[in-house]
Structures are given as structure tokens and as C-alpha cells.
Image 1 (tube, rainbow, N blue to C red):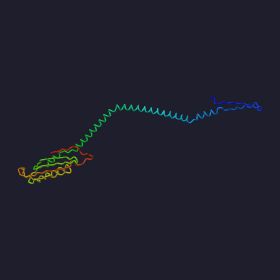
Image 2: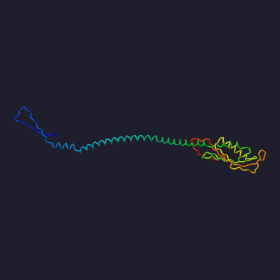
Image 3: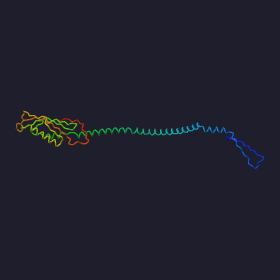
Image 4: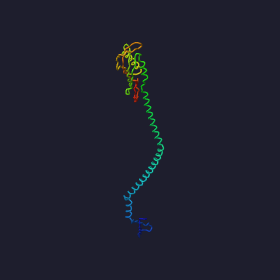
Length: 240
């Protein structure tokens, strides 16, 4: 649409030569309409709406992209869950088996410590038998292995005969102290009681006086402490 309407006026003067070019005059009769149209094009509200429309389009594109990524992540998660559903029973069984094996290993270690820390009575009884002279007799034996400090406590009851029965009992005490000191440490052998008896014993055809004694024997069965070894928790019995 042509917004301009022009009007040409051509005049000729009588004193001007016919050889001169005519002059054209252009008039704009729609100046106010054009100004209003330009103002409408530059309206701030319209420009703002255009900017908001552009931002909305960008936000829509961003939302569509995020929705696509979300669907992709959900698809991957579904695939992983499906694979985990297949593997989970095996993993659970393996974990259960691992717990069982750890329990067996712990029990084995405890048993090993019990075996390593236990006290054997046979060597002690063998040494005791070598210390008893023909003129001495054992009437009672009670032994206890202490759990805390790994000590052994033994009480020996018996009678001895001789011209000096107390000396015979002392000889037994000295022999025990010497023999046990070769194998164990912190050995102590002391009389709990030592008294003469009115009974007469016949030894090799001779009448000998008798005495009754009770010996308290204490010693540590471990010559050297083991580094890092835990004390045994096994119950210790008594031997008579």
C-alpha cells in the first residue's frame, strides 16, 4: 500500500527558455498516520510481550529437554533394577555364606587359643611321681588352673615316715621345688600344715614315726608371655 500521495505542480515562466527541465514538488499528506504507525511499532508493551514470548519458548525447549533426560534416566534405572533383581539372590546367598565362614574362622581361632593356652596335667603328675620317696605317701591331690593370671594352684596331702618324719616331708618339698622350677616359672611350694602322728609305720621291717603334711604348690605354667595373645576363656576343671 502506498502511504504517500504526491502531487506535482509544474509551472513555466514566460521568461524562461523552453530548454530548461521542469521542477517537481512532493508533498506528504499522511504524515500523522505514519507517525502513529511508527509509535505503535515502538510500543514498550509490545516489545516486552515479544521478549516474554521468546523467553517462554526457551523455557519450553528447556523443559522438553529435561523431560527427555528424565525419561532416559528412568529407562536406565529400570534396566539396572531388572539386572539387580537377577543378581540379588546370589549376592544375598554369598553374603550369608561369608558370614558363616567368618563365624567358623572366629570359632576356630578361639579353639586354637584354647588349645595353645590349656595346661597339661600329665607332665606335672610325672614330676610329682618322681619326687615321692618310698617313705612318703600321697593321700590327696587337688589342682586348679586360674583363669586370670594363668596360674596353677595345687594342694597335696600325704604322710611321711622316718626317724625324722618332718625331714622326710621337707625333702619332698625341696624336690618338688627343684623339679617344677626346671619347667615352670614363679614356683612356690609351702607347707600348709605339718604335724606329727602317733601312728607307727613299718618300712623295710623298721618301725618309723609318721607325720602328716599338706603342701600348697603354686606356679605359672607359661615360661614366657605370648605377644598379643588373649587370655583363654575356657573353664578350668579340678583334678584330684
